[in-house]
Image (tube, rainbow, N blue to C red; front, side, top):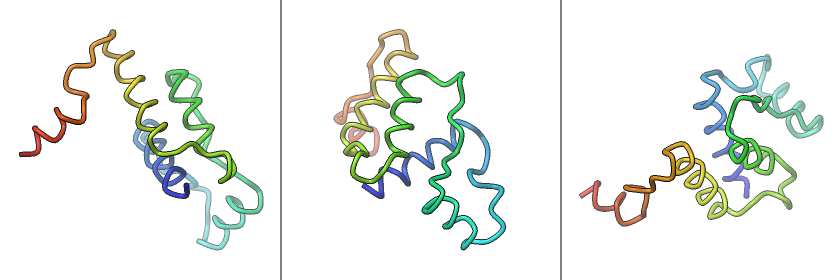
Amino acid sequence: KADVYSFAILLWEMLAGETPYAFARTVEHLADRVVNDHVRPAIHDNWPGNIKSLMKNSFGDIESRPEMKIVHNGIKAALITLRDGNSAGLSHYSIVRRRS
C-alpha cells in the first residue's frame, strides 16, 4: 500500500503542476514532517470530487489506504465523467492493443 501513496503523490504532482513538499529543506526534514506530523499536500478544491476523495484516502494511514485496483477504477470513473460518459479506449484491451 506504500505504492498507493507514491502513486497518489505522482498524481497530485501532475494535477497540481507543482512539486509536493517543496518546503522541505532536507530529506530528514521531509521524513519528519510526513511520518511524524502526517503532513500531506493540499488537495485542490477545483479537482473532481472522486479524485479528491481518492487522493484523501490514498494519503491516509497505511491500513486504510485503498488497494491499487480501487485507485485504478476511481481514476477510470473520473476520466469517463470528464469525457461526458465516453469510456472508449479506456479498457485494458484498448491499452494493450495500442502498445503493440
